[in-house]
Image (cartoon, rainbow, N blue to C red; front, side, top):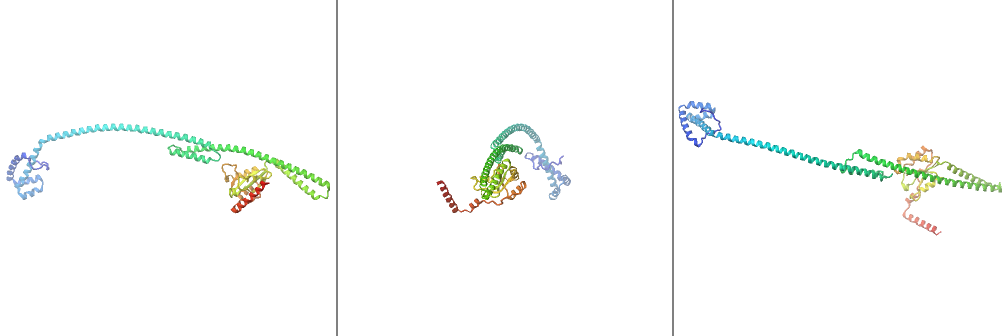
Length: 431
């Protein structure tokens, strides 16, 4: 038991209170080692299994080496005997550490449970707060959507009230701008709902157009009645004039024939020719009165007022169709119209409608269809007339005398003309 190999980390230096006991034992071991130095050295080498011990034997001798080994062993035994009473203290410390750890574990579980319950409560409170805020957001969104829907509905009604045949594009832009404002404020206006609003606006525009077309038709009928009455008065007056001329010519012819049959043959022949012309005028007036659809379709232009390539296509039932052209060139336009075609036909309204249908996409005013101005060429107009009526005579280039003279007139000539006109107007006033 004396040669038990204790752990190598135990120091070999003995404590102060055990030094006498250690020295007594060392004295005994030295004596034994002296007697048996060689066997002890060999045994120590086998026990320590160290080559350093063999070197030690060579340096100090077997007796001294054996003594050193014995001292080391004895120091280890003394160290173990000294530390043994402190094991209880170590056990106590270990127990206290274990109890402290278990206390920490219990406290940790308690704190963890408290934290978990606190986190659960905070999570519940957060969820309630979040749900409340989401409800507020939903309420605000619903309120915004309701306001936007009501606003757009009222906007459509207002645009419908302001609708005229000439401002559909303006009202549509107003509705589009209102929809964009609602979208920027957070309202949901899907494309299908936008199309519904636009369709509602289009239906209102179509109703306005129908009402306007009905009014225009009434105006057209009234204007037609006035034109027919005016044409009838003109034809009646023409018939009366032709009849009075015929009667006067017949009377003059009878008187001339009664005076001398041979002396006034030239005068008689002239009177007979005038009589035939009067009868033809009377017959033509009677024929126009009987044919309610007969009239003239005209194609005119006004370069000075509307520019090149703009033509007016209309009709008149007057016996003198140029009177209508002169009326169109009154004070409302700066220059008179130039006549390109004057077509006499039995059904003037039908020819006019056919030409208007052909020229529909070339209208200058695309809203008011009663405005009969078109952007086209004279060649296209001639082709259309020949298609629906037949060969027709026309003037390709407009004369535009006043317009061209105005372009060529300088300020001096303009002042001179104004002076001359003022002089003539003064003379007329004096008379």
